[in-house]
Each structure stands twice: as structure tokens, then as C-alpha cells.
Image 1: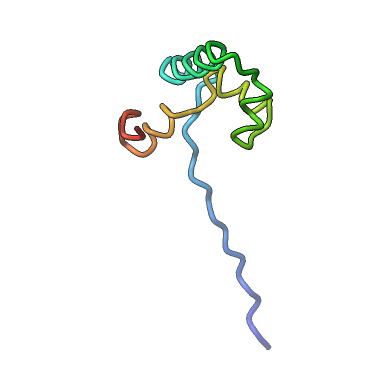
Image 2: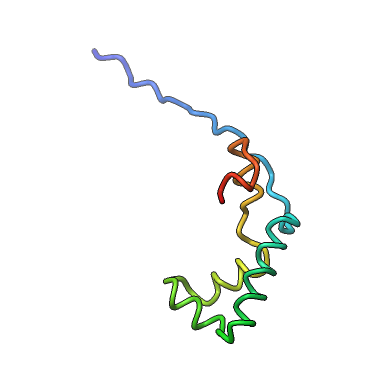
Length: 83
């Protein structure tokens, strides 16, 4: 008789909680994107299409949802490292 196969249980590591509101650094970058876009007389739809993303995704970026701060923090580097 063969032994029953053992089930392997993997415990997921607890993910750090992401704050519900964007970090001020992300908000600043989003405002700068929106400011330059408006000064260039480009609509959100036009810019989104030109860079290959949805209008809704561009809105998220302009509202500070880029998560650069959180990504940098998770990688242990300052946001400036990405530029």
C-alpha cells in the first residue's frame, strides 16, 4: 500500500498595508502631470491614447495613484532613484 500524499501548506507572508490615500510625493507628481498637460492644451483622453493607457488610468496617475513612494519604500530606495 502506498503512503498518502501529504498536502503542503504555504503561509502567505503578510503584505504591508498600503494607505488608502496617496502619499504626498505621488500627489505632487500627479499634479505636475496634470499641470503640464493642461498647459499643453492636451485632454486626458488625448494624452492617455498617445501613451497607450486608458483614460481612467491617466486619471488615477493625475490623482496621485502612481505609488512611486510605496514602490521606493518597498525596494529601499528614494523616489529620486527612479529619475
